[in-house]
Image 1 (spheres, rainbow, N blue to C red):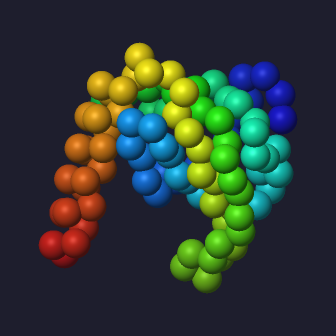
Image 2 (cartoon, rainbow, N blue to C red):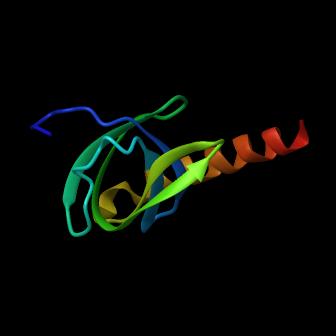
Length: 100
């Protein structure tokens, strides 16, 4: 893992203080206490900068595939308004999926 490298992950839960995501087991550099600066792209909002500190990592099985589940605390308070928008957007998407 190097500076300005990419790590792809799928957000499971996000709020103004916590983010949970899954990623490939190959991303072994995600370890507890690691602090990261990230830029996450959301389709309707664009790029949102998030600084977070990893609290825990564990292996989970989703859709018969193993992933790394990462739970982290969001550190940068300046992005909280953007996080509220993201949370609203994700809840809307979840509601649409449940209607299908």
